[in-house]
Every structure is written in structure tokens, then in C-alpha cells.
Figure 1 (tube, rainbow, N blue to C red):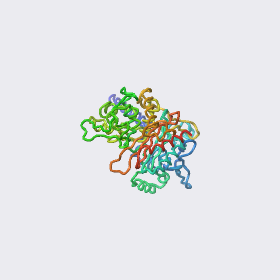
Figure 2 (cartoon, rainbow, N blue to C red; figure 1 turned 90 degrees about the vertical axis):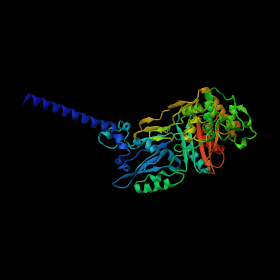
Figure 3 (cartoon, rainbow, N blue to C red; figure 1 turned 120 degrees about the horizontal axis):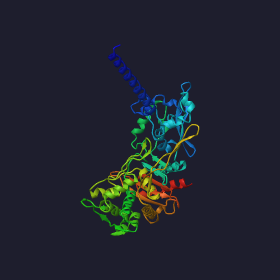
Length: 485
């Protein structure tokens, strides 16, 4: 060949070899690093093929199976998912249907179905021979007895909707997450996709949306429980529990057309006085005090900053693929809107999980921990491959400020709006009654901590019914009692 042709052929070989190497590298990268992401892509319909031919591992709590699989059929073996007391535990387990999954079924999907990379090292022979790696076990942080007690109490309250959350204030572990009305995951976790579809259609038509977890995925005006955040903003800005603060029967924010008044039941009480100690204003839940704080001193910016420190303004990632709705307090230069929001009405909305985080932050010396739901993950052979770890989200108060906030919450139970709980397992708390415009019911809230003398557990309860927030207090006490047993 001529020298010029030799050089051209040589360059062509080099380019071809480089292209082959690049192609092999891309294939290796896709198969080794992107395979799971591609399988999980919402546009990939193949992820739902043969999903019932895999024996998923169990979801357990306190040594009890909450979800598990059993074989059905003959040669074409499939596995049917089953759930224990599903209406009680559905907010934790979620469901595993022919075309979707929620709750821990989704958050821990790859551990349960055996595709998690951490399981390959525990089942190396299966992986080497191309056999499916057995699904692992997911252990939830839930306290089974307390969860059952919470659900029964919500059901017995007569509320149209209700939710309860209990946290280990020190770690953030979710001990209770109950929601009513609920649903039976056994009805949608069936092998027949058409049957599951009909059940989903029926549940989605229901007015109160039982598939929605009221504890994490729905937002409600928190009423006077939000005054805990406003009081925290005052403490963070130099006020202490004994400082005299503005009260009075009525307060009109600058530029507002309408005044904010105290509850009719406060007439003639401490809230009518022009100035009272902050601890008394909090214990008696004086609207005028906290509306003034939000509108003027320390003002919207301070309250908004403190709310963000407790977790407002962003959804809380409980586990990967399991996130709460974002609670919010309005950031505004209009004093009237800030005043209304500071008494837990107007644009202020929160999930029960968020308000449990507020109570937990106070009980935990001002440290707000990330809520989590997975205690441990294990391979089929029992080897532990992961566990939930406490993680601090933020510091909402110094320890000294948190001590004062705890004192204020104890005052609610000792002499304030929650005094009917005096002597119960609830050490400190805050009531809240949020008006729902045009509705014949209120959102009745109670947040608190206990038991005596160790304020380890933080609780938030919301029930929708006629009446006041204190009517959710006994449910909180019942939950703390169950946790303390």
C-alpha cells in the first residue's frame, strides 16, 4: 500500500477501537450505575411486569408482621401481599398494587423485592448463579400497641377526619402515625389489575379521601398550637417566660379593617388585662398577644425564621420516596395577614407530623430531629444491611430557651386551657381550635409531651368535629400511656 493509505487505515482502526471502548464503557456505566434508575423510571412500563412473581420480604414492627407475601397458584406461581389490621397500619406500610406502591412498600421497595445492591453481598451465590436474591426484611420504628391505641381513639372520637403522630423527641423515630378515615390495603394489593383499579376508583370517589395519609399528606390550620412557634420567636428575641407582654380584649393590626379578639370564654379573665406575663398569655391562649407579636413585635420575619427552624416551608423527607406535605407560615409585609397567621389561622397550615416536630423540638432542648420510619433493614439470612440513624435538622431554640418553652407548655396543663389533663401522663402541651370557614366543625388540636417525669415522647393530635382543641387532649394522653407501658 501507499504510505498515505496506510496512515488512513491506521487512523480508522484507532478511531474504531476508541469508539468500541467508549461503547463498552457506556454499556458498563448504564448496566452498573443506571440500571436501577432506568427500571424505576415512571415511563418504564416494564417495571410492573411480573412484579407479583417475586416474593417480597416482610415489613415488621415489635416482632409482628405488618405486611408479608404468600404464594398462590400452581406452575405459574405468584405471590399475594397481605396486611395485618390494615386500616390501623396503612399509613406506615402503604400498599403494593399491580401498578404502584406507597408508604414503606415504596420507600423500601428494593430491599423488599431483593434488588437492593446491599443484598448482593449477603446472597453472593444467588447473584453469581443468576438467581433472584431473596427479599429483605424492613423493621419499622412504630410502637404497635400505641399505634393501635391511637387509631382506636381517633375512631372513637366521632371526628370526620383525624390524625395522630408520636415521635421519640430525642431521635426523631416515628412511634405512631395514625390516620382516619383509613382503608384496607388488602383490597388494592391484589393480583388482578382490573380489580385493583375498581377499588382505587371507589376510594378516590370518597369525599374524605381515605388513601391520603392525614398525618403527613394533608394540611390543616393549626390554630393556637402555632402560638408555640410564635412564643419561641419571642424567646429567641430576648423575651423570657416572665416578661410582661401586651394582651387586652381586642387588637387591630396596623392597616387592618377588622380587629382580632380573644375567645368569648376569656372575657373577664387574664387575657382582658392590658399586660400579663408571656407564660400566662400562652397558658390562657390570648389571641391578642400572639397576633400582636406576629404583626409587630418581634414581627413577621422573626416568626417566619423560627417556623423555618422547626421545619415549616419544606416537605419533610421521612424516607426516600416518602415525603410529607410542606407546612407554611406566610412571609408578608402586611401586619393583618401576619397577625392572623400567628394565631394559626389564615394562610398558616401544618401537617400533624410538623406540629409533633414542634412539640418534640421543645421537649428535646431546642433540637429538631428528622423524623424517620425505618429502624432496621435486614437480608433474608438475618444480616443487617442498614438502620435508621438520628439526624438533627435544625436547632430552633437554645437549651435555656427550650427550658422556658417547656415551662410554658407545662403551665397550659397546670393552670391553662389544658388543665383537664392535670395528673395525666401529659406533662406539657398546647391546645388549638381552628375555625374552618363555612363548616359546622373545627380542627381540634392538641400537641404535647410526656410521660411524667421523663418528657421523652412528643405527640400531635388533630380531630375534625364540633368543639375545642382540648377534646383531642385525652387522645394524646392515651397514646403516651400506651408508649409508657
